Length: 254
Image (cartoon, rainbow, N blue to C red; front, side, top):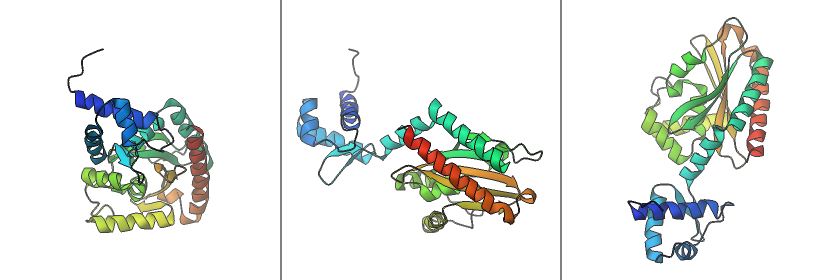
């Protein structure tokens, strides 16, 4: 076996592997069981686990059992999102939506405080909103970015602020955490984000897992002149159905 330069690091990874793979239903493992399997004193295992909890890779429940933390779940979500099977399903759902509403659609997710576009389908109309332009906008200027802010976990919310700062003029003059949280709550109440500016109307809705965890955001962009408010309801309904399809696909791939 190859020599491990820092033994305690290997022990931490071995503990994490047990927690993730030996208790896949999330029921957790007790300290005594982990220490026994690792053949190490409980105090030593406890100290390593404390560091892993502080770093967000492990959590402890009311029964004092250890289970995978938020960062493990985020890594798992990311790996699933970029898998070939998931990518194909997302593309198919977006293609069907674009064909129905004849406008550009996008699916984006949150990764490390950044808005990452995983799929996009351009409209067949002669005049289009190019996704390259949308991606060059600041995070908060996109409805998908605002939806991500609204549905982010506490850790992800902190990452967004660390990476993106506060929106300022790009979102209602918001310049502190309290106002940003309040704006996010408004989106959660509405179930969507809509932006109308610079001759573009843009919509976004969250895609959520069975337990309410944020998976990504479905967006639609159209030139303002081609998307009067009288046509918004058709787009909204089509997006709702697509979100339901995406969420069902997500559950089927688990």
